[in-house]
Image (cartoon, rainbow, N blue to C red; front, side, top):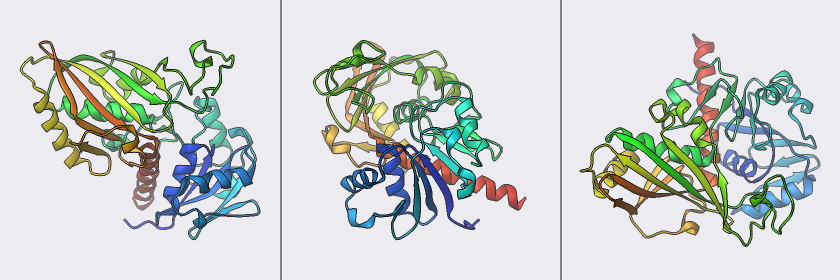
Amino acid sequence: MAQQHPIRVGIMGFGQTGRQIFELASRSDDVEIVAIADIGKREILHYLLCSEVNEPERHRLEGNFLVNDRFRARLMEIDRPAEMPWDIFNVDIVIDSTGKYRDRHDMEGHLNNGAHRVLLRTLPTDHIDRIVIPGINASAASADDRMISAGSATTSALALLLNSLSSSFKIDCGSMTTIHSYTSDQPVQDYAGSDFRRSRSAAKNIIPNSHEASLWLGSILPEFEGKILTSALNVPVQEGCLLDVNLVMSDASVTPEDVNEVMRAAAGKLPGILEVVEDPIVSSDVIGNPHSLVFDTKGTIKAGLNTIKTLSWYESLGHAARLLDVVRLYSKLDQQQEAA
């Protein structure tokens, strides 16, 4: 069914992911960003957006609006979901890309203020209607869903890897460590925060960290409930992340090349989402890559009788692209419901 009108999207939080969503939408023909909530000064938000894109002249600041050839987005200096009047913008869906407002109460703030639906760019803190990972469980989405998460960049990458391999092999258990670029909530210099290790400088340390993917993996792939341990190492790299996964296979005869062949086949079934690379790439080589998972065949090795180690890459642009995929998915479901 043809799209009746561009999908009207609001964004709360104009950090890296919010800006990537905006740029991707500006190059689409079916999504319009109509309003942006962020406490940053509008001149600085415009400056940051233009500093990150190939054609900065495409985006203009006109008063309180960020403007390009496709749409005008109203900038609102608002910090909390309960304060943002989404109803006056007639938004179809709000993408909360702050990473802060992850519980039902805050998500309800978006809905109570006029949003038809709210989509988190990260994992929730309590149970919501749906966690949707494109390439895995999009078919489970319902037009009745109002509070949704698209997981996180790391969770999506891990889930895609596990889902692809479990279609051919029985996996007993495993562990994942993401070697992750440092994030905006880490200090550049040592600065006392709520966590001892994350109070240390992101620019000069490898910082061990926990990761929440294991808490929600069972909601996405029930067969892996309680079977995968997840952790993170934040490193002094600005962009590009590495997924280091060790899997214990039931069948000791599985070889690294068996795993690589399965991943090559999976990439053929998920164009734009999963990519396989045969070259000896490094983290900077995946900057600007819109795939959620870039599987590295040269990183697949066997340890002992039945443990397979894999390496995969990803970065935030891939997750921004999947967020828009989820937006389109729910728009299509709404159209089907209206036509029924």
